[in-house]
Image 1: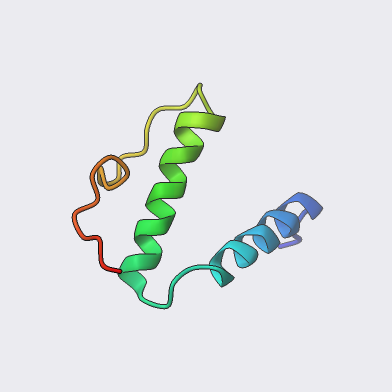
Image 2 (image 1 turned 135 degrees about the vertical axis):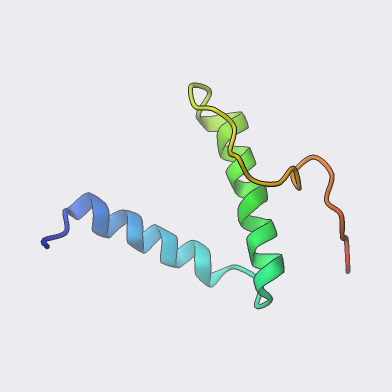
Length: 64
């Protein structure tokens, strides 16, 4: 299957984002959940909210 230039570009962006995530899987997924909520709330007003956890509004664990 041949990949389009747009697909390659989007995959590259995903790699760049993933390279900045925390090492722990749970923390990385929480960051992605925050980002997903930000995209839905700020950038894509036409789509429905994601069906994931409500971690954006009230994170359950805040370890520093």
